[in-house]
Image (cartoon, rainbow, N blue to C red; front, side):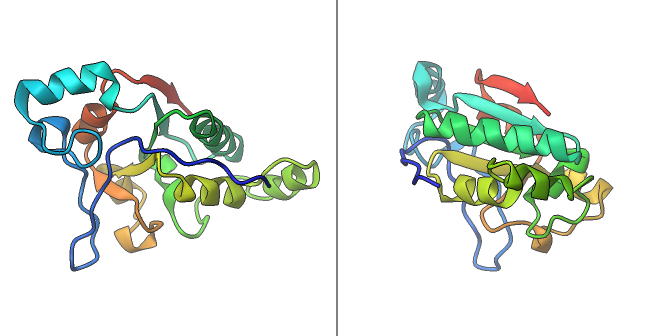
Length: 176
């Protein structure tokens, strides 16, 4: 698979010394990334001028076709230079877990790969390697699906829905 180009983009998240995930800060409270050091109305103005993400993708189901389509869209948009934010909510949090436990119809991935199309793991690896992709899951989705933070991929922020909406701003939104 060709190497995808990287570029700076969405807000970055930090990991505390205990290893737990902390949510990215909102643009008004001191974001990391394009709005670092900007606060208040200046942050809102910078965000409106394109400092946020271009595409926000919400994954709310664990069906193979929906997860695959969401990851394909995210990788493609990122490869085209767009900043992408992926957010798992409800059953969609399983797409952000290290293991694919909870994914419905995982056997479909083998047929997809045999047809020469990137599989889920290839897509997810590409997303974690790109600088302009931010991964988040809903804290209530983890609870509802009985998924622990330790089951998540490295670099996935656990946040509430308000943080997702704040980070997505006026980006285009796709729901899978």
